[in-house]
Image 1 (spheres, rainbow, N blue to C red):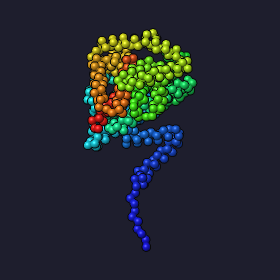
Image 2 (image 1 turned 90 degrees about the vertical axis):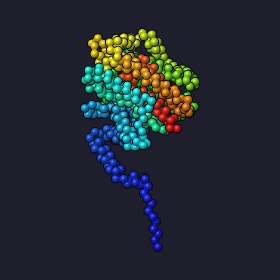
Image 3 (image 1 turned 45 degrees about the vertical axis):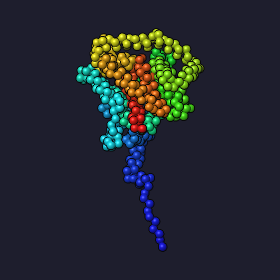
Image 4 (image 1 turned 60 degrees about the vertical axis):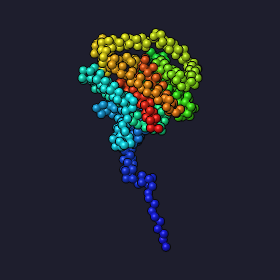
Amino acid sequence: MSINIPAQPPTLRDQIVQSPLLIAGLALACGGLIGGITAFGPLYAVAGLLALALATALLISVKAGLIAALAIATIIPFGTLPFKAIITPNFLTVTLVTLNAVWFLRALARSDTYDVRFGSLGLPLIGFLGLTLFSLILGARGLPDPQTLHNYAKFVLGVFCYLTVINCVRDRDTARLVVCALIIVGGISALIGLILWVLPDATALQLLVALGRIGYPTSGRVLRYVEDDPNGLERAIGLNVDPNSFGGMLALVAVLTLTQLAAPHPLLPRWLLATLGGIQVLTLLLTFSRAALFGLVIAAAYLATVRYRRLWRYMIIAGVTGGVLLMGLGYADDFINRVLSGVQFRDQAQQMRLDEYANAIAIIQRYPVFGIGFGAAPDLDLSAGVSSIYLAIAQRMGLVGLVVFIGLIGFWYTRSLHILPQLDDESTSWLLGCQGAVVAALAVGLADHYFFNIEFSHMATLLWCTMGLGSAIEWLINES
């Protein structure tokens, strides 16, 4: 007598394994791998498969997209696709376009669950972007050149990250993930910069030049030195091309790391935060960027005054440790002299800044309302570009643009300070970290322009992502 055992329904694992789509995908992947190895070699074939896997992750998860965008912006911001299709899109642009498409299409498909959020700054920020477009067209007399237009588009994507973040960070787990990701990728970027700085110049140069296939410079000032003297102090640059922008990025992420280190309930183990924070601060010191160091100190002092008194102790420990390391490396005297010469405006770099400031003020006097746009200066006796966020905005967008920018920042801070009393300890550490990071960026901006420079769109991405994260926390409070 036979017993009929009812068939069990196939499990999800069985359905996936037997899926025709999976089988077809594996066949395509194997065929692509074999063909890629044959045509281009194993390195490019593996890179292509990794890119395909990343693209798949971006299309199905906004979390993956956020982490990828932050990783690219901090670690390899100037990486481009190794081919040209009219323009050469960089990794960050492709990632941000894909991420924005995913969350927007998700909102259209499931509007009952995923509403489009504008946050406290959404509509004013769109107005600010409209003002930048007006200045671009006005300054170029209606015909901006292709390179300026390309850089401007990347800059707009970076500023738009405010809306991207508040529409992707919709729960506490995602907020935790974004904060942790930014701290970790910032630590990885700092570690790469430290390793390249420690390596012999010839080896570091060879490694950096090898990145020429993905858009990195292969000649000229690939390695950077104080006063551009190859016999002088080498400056840490990581994969960020410029030591000052690298230092500004490290100041922003180091503040987030230090905030978590001082928080009662940190998101990561304290030993890991101390390690990552130490690497970030040390590498920042080795950029020899005085503006970045100033921004970090101001932001840490802000956080220590507002909430975390223990940060004063960490600042003293970090200062002593950094001093000891610089002395051990034999750079203490050079570092101190560089800081003092900067404060006293005695060195070549500071003299150039003074000339830039005078030139920027002359431009603002001639074009006070809407500025000169994002291209070259319209007058032969003037030149565009100045090492200050505020003067850069005023000369590019006029005093109207500067007032709007300051108003946006002021309104964001007012809102974030207003909601602080409503937060628990964990959320407080997130929002204070965002506040401190923005303070660092604004302080750095007194003597550097990278957070408002269309050629360094990744810096705008980091700034507005941080502000978007701060505004996203407000939504989490409203929904709790």
